[in-house]
Image (cartoon, rainbow, N blue to C red; front, side, top):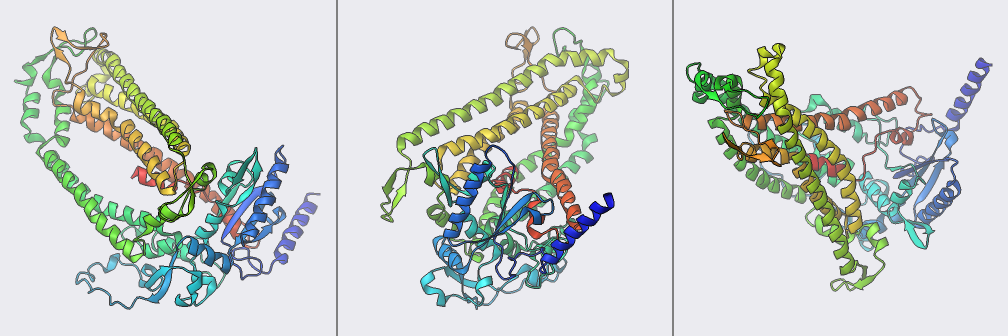
Length: 632
């Protein structure tokens, strides 16, 4: 029986292979002519809402066809797992030119005939860092102009199928998908692929890559730009090479191109700061033995003769100053004359970074025709949610067209709720910081008693002081609280930004940025501000110590200062954040993509199609770049 099943499965696969002469590792419809610009996927889940989802899909796809898009459905029997339907979408020429005019997309009118700039005499030295010219500049430089249907003869239209790049075609189809209606529910007009993804009508919506990143496609018409980007750029061994920004922009679009341009510039500038920081650190390392304050603290004749008052009221005893010898020496690594120079240098560095980036950005704006990009985005890219929820309209005094608007009273109420929510969460951070301070005050005496009475800890008592032990454990506790608050606040910030109903995508991102940056700045660095500016400043003196809540005695800094503790605090928070971020952003996606690649390599291309391969990739997320910028 088992051999019979295997034979039937073999026949089924053989029939599927014979059914298509064209490889399914293709970005075209079955006719091999029409390009797939977007893919929607869904499954029959046989839930109570099956009929409702079926009706939504039918209405949505019908409206897409009315908008001029062409659809082709792959039955679930054709999918690798036999469960997923795929709807392939193609935008014909008429749709592309209509929406290119609506979106004010700039297209070439003439090849640039301005002579290139004079070559840099140092170019020969930089040759090892260069990439091939074809990779750096995949297409000629053109003079461009906004597209107009009535003036098509002015543009360099050699081939209608390749005139608009895949990233532009994807952008146009995505614009249609986000605004296409799918019916009326509860008396309200419903539209947009985002809602359909949220309610489970569709499981995914995505454009296609042109090939697998580790090998070229079999299709001779494929440019294999993804493969080129991987081989020349997105590999660790190519880290020292310049970035092919024009190819990144051509393949992924302007927003992602600008991000990598900024990230590369930021990394170059940080390298300079890192070199100066390393020199300052080495200065502290080499002059450690010459530090006069450390010498006096460590000297048995000076520090060994100075008796210090107990650091807590009950469990602590009198102690000699030279017991903090090691911590004072290590403090000199970060607290020396070079530290002052480095602080001044970083103040200058950040100013230069901003000014040089403005120049780099202006150059990219000119080269990529993005000079009016922000203004065009503000005018053209009204959010679908804004258009849906703002039922009232008024005449625009500039364009004299009727536009949706949100009444001033409604805006005021929404902003009040938003501001109150943000203040509540910032107050919650401050409350959690006070709780960590109370923890520090409460456990210090316990650590002091433990280290004094435990013989096994005596050999390291000079290095692991009660202050350091308290600081390390408090920093770890603080980091856990930071990550928990951050997890919940991200969801709250998105919710209250949605509630404000921003007019454009740019306004939405700006408002979300303000909320997230304010919160994360307070969340990540409030404890560092406490250690740097408040700890040890309100201690009192013997016989008249100050107490928090009249119960816990305020803590003091190490005799060598609080900077070593500040360094410990910052290291634990930042290193912990980086480790957690790398697990989320690198390790988990790598595992998932490795599993997807394993499936891709174990299935023939005839069976495991291009749209299935990309369906199994990790989702980028609607705010993917937002989180990248925020982290940097």
